[in-house]
Length: 114
Image (cartoon, rainbow, N blue to C red):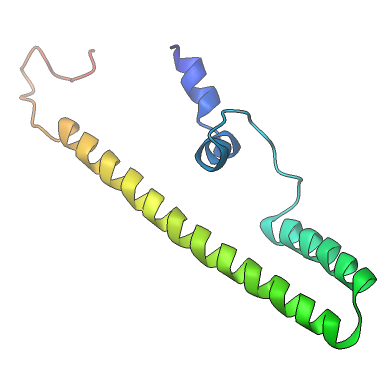
């Protein structure tokens, strides 16, 4: 594997797709900020609900929708924290390899060649 391949794979969207879907396919987001993307999806869902329900039924459908999205948000936030912590722990273990002191006159210094 070449260095350029690694740089190409070090992409937020590619990594997200791999973790969520098990695929290296790089799907770019729809566009816009996080807030704009969420608001667009919310608006589309509310339009759909309003076209199907009214009055108390609409309120109940909206409440169910918001309860569902709150659970998704909570679960995926927790999973994200756990995955981030796991990755940080693995990185911290690998960093120990670089913390060993090298005498300045050693032929192994610097550790990555001259």
